[in-house]
Amino acid sequence: MQGIYKQVIRTRYLKHLGILTLSTQATNENLNPINLSHQVSKMSEKKVVIVGSGPAAHTAAIYLSRAELKPTLYEGMLANDTAAGGQLTTTTEVENFPGFPDGVLGSKLMDLMREQSVKFGTEIITETISKIDLSSKPFKLYSEMDEDTPIEADAVILATGANARRMHLPGEDKYWQAGISACAVCDGAVPIFREKPLAVVGGGDSAAEEAMFLTKYGSKVYVVVRRDQLRASSIMAKRLLSHPKIEVLWNKVPVAADGDGKVLTSITLKDTKTEETSELPVNGLFYAIGHTPATKIVKDQLELDDQGYVITKPGSSETSVPGVFAAGDVQDKKYRQAITSAGTGCMAGLDAEKYLSELE
View (spheres, rainbow, N blue to C red):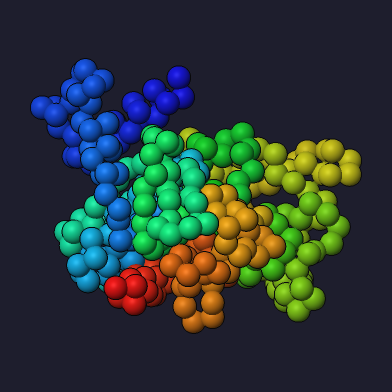
């Protein structure tokens, strides 16, 4: 049943992109154009496969396709519960990507990147890579749609990203990107947060950095900390606690989000010691509780750090396995911006091109 559900979702998504038309939608399963294109695409070995769909993946694809290496990009079908296009598809206005002085919708930006990849000859397949075997060359990749047929590649670029951890509060889905966010740097400057009370959840360095960043825009910033102390480094903790616009709420966790139907207006907090609840009027709630890199498919095959991020050689996108490159948030736990992801995508494209030329 799950396979049928994914097939239906995939068909709807391809129709949305204009890849399927009414005339090509066969009703007979044996004539299903999805199945046919899927089978044909796997009959030959590929020079380079890109796994991912965000700025890193498409930038790598653009560089490789312009170098006439005919890359194949597997953009995923709701991979890690995220639509093709990655985390930017969950944001609204992007104001810090160069070339868009009036800002651009995150989904629109990814549509443009995808269009550019296709223009230069990238083959894009809307399937999720569920397994990768890096033990021998050519490398073997397997799609969720057909886990028995390997896709062989001389080089692989891993650009699967990292998902921000969410709390899944009651009301979170309703007010996601309407007051609730997991990236203050990305969203903090939007008009709905200006001169409004804001809250950050977390007690580490990231939470401290995001809270101080938000003081530029919010009237007051609350930092909601589960315990009675911060996990942040001493210097970050000192800056946080001494900032006049920041108030730390100790031993508190958010348990619900509420609003006026359009935007967030308050959150409910629970005291971790007394279990009493209280309402905190805020127009912004920012999660700073970490990210989970999408590296499950290469676990125990590539060198990862203690948080699961791919380790790359300094100044390059090269991983511990020659011929495998990593770009974007899957290897970047510091910046996590669209522009830095695009930059490492460029590096991966150039590194992969060099690697392939040396193979020849």
